[in-house]
Image (cartoon, rainbow, N blue to C red; front, side):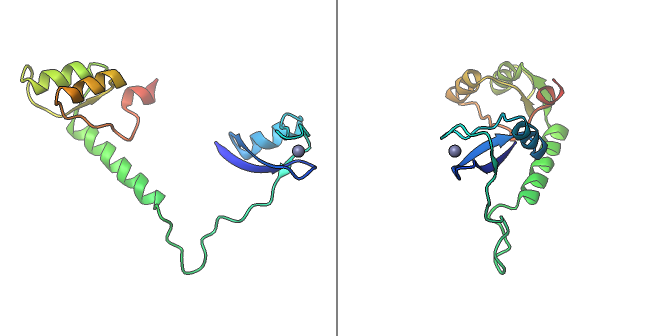
Length: 138
Ligand SMILES: [Zn+2]
């Protein structure tokens, strides 16, 4: 999704989200994009300040590339070192915690309610910042 600053023929500026630049152009050409203030469908992209960092200040606050690389690394580590238990995560985490099953690192899916119950029971869990295998495959 991309956000565009758009302007109608009365220079009302508003924001709208599109799947892509092509999406915007196709919808605008068919008159499907209208100004929320005057409903004019003659919209164009409004002039925007270029998102280029000023000279001498090229370091962005978040290095997206490094962050993604760290995420990919973390995902590889988890997938290599932990057992995927799918939707049995809450049950398995409990069993591991109480020694009913061999101690090991696991990952999988849990609902918010299940996750909250695990935390309440003092079981250490952490949300993963990436989609698990099942979520990605479905
Ligand atoms: Zn307008």
